[in-house]
Each structure stands twice: as C-alpha cells, then as structure tokens.
Amino acid sequence: MSRLPVVAAPMAGGPSTPALVAAVAAAGGYGYLAAGYLTAERLAAQIAELRERSTAPFGVNLFLPGPPEERDVRRYARRIAPEAAALEVELGDPHPWDDPDVGTRLDEKIRVLRDDPPDTISLTFALPDPDRLAALRATGARLTATVTSPEEAAAAERLGLDGLVVQGTDAGGHRGIHDVGIEPSDVDTLDLLVEVRRRTGLPVIAAGGVHDAAGVRRALDAGATAVQLGTAFLRTDAAGTSATHRDALADPDVSGTLVTRAFTGRPARALTNRFAVEHGPLAPAAYPELHHLTRPIRAAAAAAGDTSRLHLWAGVHFRRADDGPAAEVVRRLTP
Image (cartoon, rainbow, N blue to C red; front, side, top):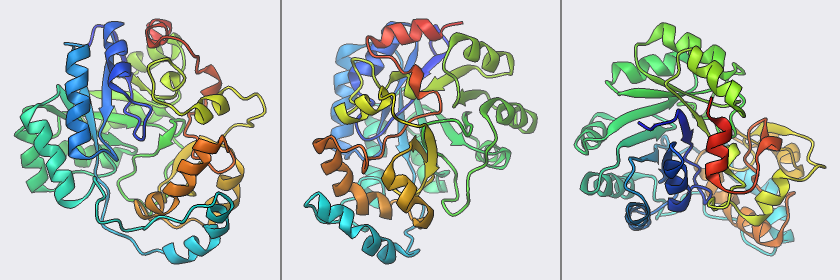
C-alpha cells in the first residue's frame, strides 16, 4: 500500500484534502480522500486535483448511511432551537432532497470511482447491498470496511471484502458502528484488533488511540498491516481543518473528550464542550437526520469562533496533534 505503515484517515467535512493526501504520500505514507458529504462533482474534482499533485496510490472513503430514522428528531429540534436562534440561523432540514450520501446521489459517486478508480475504496457506517457491492467491485479497487466489533468484521469477510479498518474506542470522530441505534463498545484498538484477527483472516488496519511510533509498533506487532490516524493530522498545514477547530485542539483549557450523539445522531468522539454535555444525553440515534438538522448551527459556530456549539472531532490523544508539515507527523509516527 505504501512504503511506511502510516495511513492518514479520511476526515469528512473539510480536514481531508488532496494536499494532505499528497503530502502524506510524499513522506511515504498512504492517504484517503473523504467522499462523505461531497457531491459526485466535488469528489471528481478532488480526485483530479490529487492526481495533479501526486502519482502515489490513494484511497477514497464512502459513507453508507442506514435507512431514514424518525426517532424523536422533532423533539430534539425543539430542544436545540434556541442554539440556532442564538447564532441567528435556522435549523436544517433533517431530510434534504440533495443529501449526497444516499440514493442515486451515492450511486453517482460510485460511478465517479468507476471512471477514475482509486487504489482502495473504504466503506463506513454499513456494508453495501448486493447491487452496490457489484458496482464497487466493478471499479477494480480494493474494498475495505470500517468495523467496531468482531461481528461486523465477520460480516464484512462473508461479503467478500478485501480488508478491514478496525476502529477502537479511543478514535476521534464518528464511530463506524453498523447499527446506529446501538451504543459503541469501549474496547480499545489493540484488544479489538486481536479479537478480530482471531475471528477473520482478512488483513487489518488499526485505527484509534495511537499517537506515537511506539504505538504504531505495538499495533504492527499485534498483527496490523498499518495504522490509520486522523487527529494527528488535524493541525497540519495541508489539512482543511477550520481555524476554530485547530485552536480548540491546542487550547489548554479543554478538559478532554467524550463520545456524543449531540451533533449528528451517531456516536462520535469530540472535545468536551457545552453543547455535547447538555444535549448529548437526549440526542436520538438518528443519522444523518441530526447531521442535517444541526449543520447550520455548526457552520455558524465555526465561522464565529464559537467552540461551545461546534463538533470538535478528536481522539483521546488530541494534545499530541502538532501543527506544521504532515511529513513531520509521518516521520514521527514511523517505527
């Protein structure tokens, strides 16, 4: 896959950029473009830009959200309406007609990948149905899935996928659980990695809780082929992370992280802030409905520098996220 066992995770919503993927590849690592939330046209443009920047292999990550949910979304909307009013925005439509990750719009992105295939396509939040699996296979790319349990790993192997990204509890951002309604486990990455390797014969990439070369080495010794990291790259020069998010990662007053559904309806690890603490316990398990509902709040908060209302995705070792070139991060992580 790459010369070094360091993978820059796909981080949807801005942080993952063609420049970041190219910089990681130039340093000997491997990177992913994040197709989640992108239209087919924007995905095609990012792939074209990346090919201009680099000839190295790369991956593309797709979100596969489950069926629509109506679990108390309206009640939650009433609860957070004052947050939107405080920022002078309206709440978003929980069911927008142009969601780029569902239906025919998702199929359009798969056709982009068929016409200009990456080296790897990784899948997050669910496994594909037979028709989409056939379309993904037709790209010729290697297919992998994010899994958070041995059961999800076994299901991916039965489907005939080529590899797994094993995500432990310490990982930042969305947990990749396949059933949005269940609570994610608190198993750390190395323990989960060992159990998944016991249950399946697929190659695995470890994701979550690694922040230094020693951690990479432990994962490799436990049987991983590589280690995937996201938080480590959030503050690097080439990342598209917002200034508000960057500053929060370096803020000594931030108390830590927590797993919350407050922003998107899916469990996700973020820096602890008021919105997550106050609303997370009552947020319904409804993704992508809550993602769309809270999107105007999050966009306005980012623009205003308001960290109290922003989804500040981060893993538990966020204090080790350095600014500067992505190549330096790759070198620091190389065992």
